[in-house]
Length: 175
Image (cartoon, rainbow, N blue to C red; front, side, top):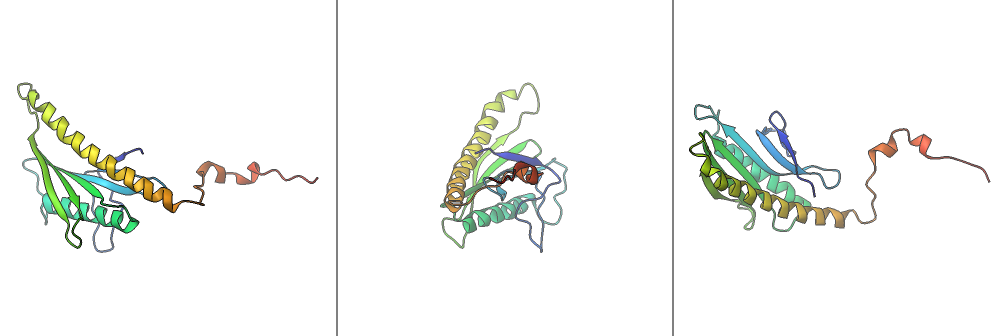
């Protein structure tokens, strides 16, 4: 399963008529035809203005929508991840729906980002936090892939190249 990413100016796969979230960064998988978001990141400077709702709330709403899509798809015990960066502070979160209709958003780690050569020794803690998020995303991606494989039994994923000029691929002959 390949994790893909998209930087700012994109939107989540779970856009709604009432609202559209545009996270600063999103990680997703596309095991079949549909895209499923597994994590999002919001980044603000220390002076950054978060707008009407806080970045923490926005991240929670983005994660809830991602989780809803995974639950609707039939993924067993899905988890989605969130990263919130405010200045030189990085917080990592995980959300699950173990107790539906409640969504549980848990702070996994809060670390300080290096801001000088002297504080570069903080890098291992940052790396550990990001690696923890990656492992959670991979676990959920594997569960999603299993659900998608079960749903695709007897179906064939079309190769986009075979549709381009498909009349050239079939050769009719009389015998």
